[in-house]
Image (cartoon, rainbow, N blue to C red):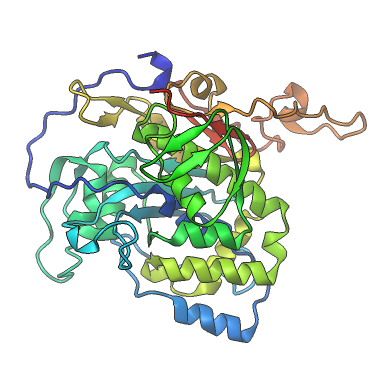
Length: 430
């Protein structure tokens, strides 16, 4: 494959295996990740009536405790929080009790088929959302047993696929595994239930997605003609779940189409007045809290409101969705982190902004494509004030504030997009 795709053969590390996870072949339910993203993106500090506030509190599910959890400080009831945060977002493949997607009794384990890391910078100037492939081999450290928190810890293991960690040790173990992988402390997290994306996409009035050619996926029931579609409810869920219908038919292609959806969702929230509409805010908050299991430090709904307030005015071009860089194993049974993963880790650890090399995503064999109908950006007005490196160079990735660090342009094997970009899903030609 092309070096720009980031999928050159890489051999998995030879490490002892300290345990064995149950085998599982459940299909991915990728739509659920949108619910967890909206939990921090889609609720503003607008006042909600007393009845609504009580109803939201009653919607909160029992919490999950994380190893690195800490009490959130400097989080006002109204207004933006101070400082940044890091949040692990997990979408499990647990089938709903209504049996709409198969018999829930057939499930032998619950997998984290969606795993994302949301990082909000300390100064609220940039946001990174990192997607970790479900078939990426990782090492799992010792984890607290969620069924016996005070007892003996679960054994460490090696050469485990990422999506098996939730079934082994719960959300806390997923967070601990990502901490070991990235070197970043993760004090907050949440698990999204199956119908979350359907409820949330309806609450915001639909999310626009574009496709370049007809998508047909009988596995998820997704059938879309070329063009732009406003998706909500189960249609949005089908789009985020589809793997066979987009890109190269792989999990990596599915991540790319998810990123186009989430970028569009972010644009919708900033442009449609949603963040200032108390009725929509209530509907969104209700959908989030009814469909998520949150960590202990996020049990107060006003904390979610304050977190979201920090993102209300973030420059869309500084909200970056990226795939954790990997390469295929020799036997193509999965992927492992590539050398570029250390560059991503270092940027997260140092709280530095990043930018995607446009050539990387443009030439990716499994990614999305630029919107062919998108108008070229208008040139700045002649009387517009020139500030910072962006004005001097015309580079949109350059910081407007001369004192702000320039974004780290990631290597060619790191694909993704920022929230200002309109990209389109392409049908799986295979």
